[in-house]
Image (cartoon, rainbow, N blue to C red; front, side, top):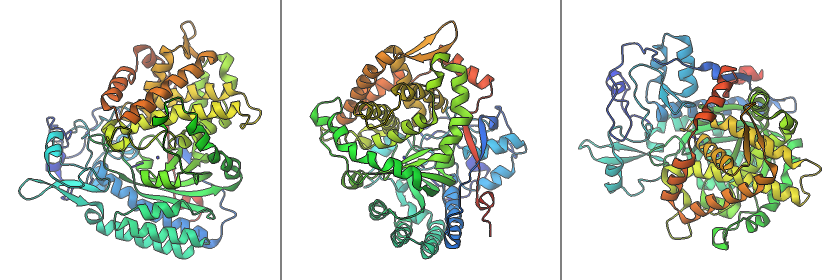
Length: 554
């Protein structure tokens, strides 16, 4: 699952007040040219050329990919405005140090996304928790007390009027020129589509971009099945809003379906209702029935933009996020196979070579990594979307913890699904230990995303829970970890029950207690993670991408 803008130019005056949005002291005014004060770390990203087999595509489809990439670039610019502010290109041009400039591009600003958003450019303090969605000087209390119908909506900015009062500006108003251009590009792409249904979706999505009404296009997208090319575009995920978790950020993926792998996956969605019934919680925490139209497909991604391209790169998608559409239609799970392969080869295997007990390294496989990632996305459809005690949706009740709690739930329930399907003989002749050992190794990979990442925080909670339950065991002599397979299933069941209950109760205080207690990196774990850094094992990947890389430049 992914993604405001300052309405005035971002000059030196604005740069001087880039402080956290809860009233913290503003950083000193920066020098005329940005100065690097903390060592930038572009080397933590491994280069990867984002390509795919295009031989089966028609000339019209290739032209459509070029147009969709152009529309994605607009989403990229909008995300810069939401994350950092206006005039980012001018600011980047003022960074003399090449490594710092590259690192700023990778992070969409002067804050290190994989190191708890620490600033690495002189003159910048802590990143505002609300990014550019809210005024920098707005407190949570002021927001809570303001009478602004729809103020917790996904698609609006909070700004001040001439009298200093808070007001709402819809995205489609704030970004009207950019969104109009993006909508026109989607309409052009629709004329080239071989699939009539996909052409209709592109036109509906164009209308959604300029109206902020995305539900119709989300619903229609769920029924588009015959397209070789796909695009996920718009304001989607709320991770960038760390103040409330309300606002969605712009992003885009341009995708080419892998038909062979998709056919292998398609049958698993049918198991969702039975798996929901078997969840280890009382009936009231699983009364909702997941949509039966849920769809599983594998894709090669050929372009990332905006939030999806910032910091850690998404390797699987579960959409739409709209709770009403999920309950009615289910979701689509898109596995980004080429990006997943890159992370497995460049990151996961080197981590395993250093941190995993040699006796278990043979259980770390790409097929298990793919399956764990896939079932993570499927598991977003399990549990419930609405609290059982009239506290609204789970997302609304969990506020800023909603993303990390949901990612934690999906991680652990994905493993639960694999365990249950393996027991039922639905996964073929594979060793369950492959999934468990690869799962543990992936926890180390995701913890390195840092506390500012919902995935990173969720993995910290899970790692410490499994350590405390004896499911993960560290050998003090070798400094390597192994899975205690006998304790793994019990720990998985207990954590599943805990997270599902916290979500169903809308128990924000309980979620905060769990996060504060378990969502930390111990001294021992930090020392082990430092070994990975010293060995120069990448934390994530950066893409060489675009029409030229694909060989389809006009």
